[in-house]
Image 1 (cartoon, rainbow, N blue to C red):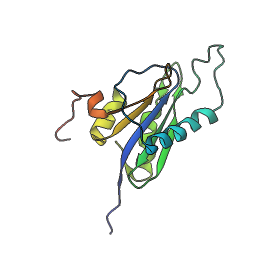
Image 2: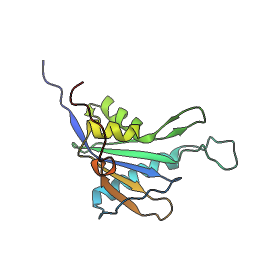
Image 3: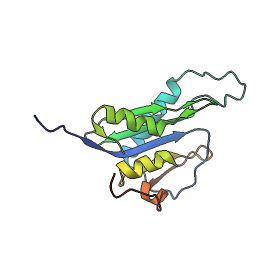
Image 4: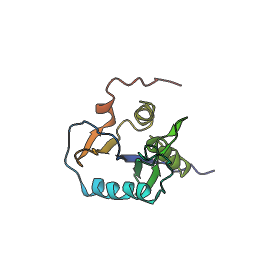
Length: 147
């Protein structure tokens, strides 16, 4: 039996069009800019489903994860008043389903599975892209030593 080949997620991008985010900005690379373009596509493609005039339940966040083998996985959030599925968690699950080792609950998942991951976030107020390592965002995250 051959060993299953796994790839790690190198970057995770969340595009949030509804909430501002404060973080120290870093220079963006061509890889970052490509992920931004790819992550915006699921939001634009998702049909509005809100019946309220404010459209508070429409898809407002998407995530793109870049695996070390170059594959990009995307997902959009699904908001509902009773519960929600965030784009960041579902994109990690999608990547894991494809054989990529998947890296406050979404951040802990990233810390546990991908402690070296860099997270990119679009500030919807300014349009600026901000980047930080997940350990910079959650410096005191509890990580179990052994399961």
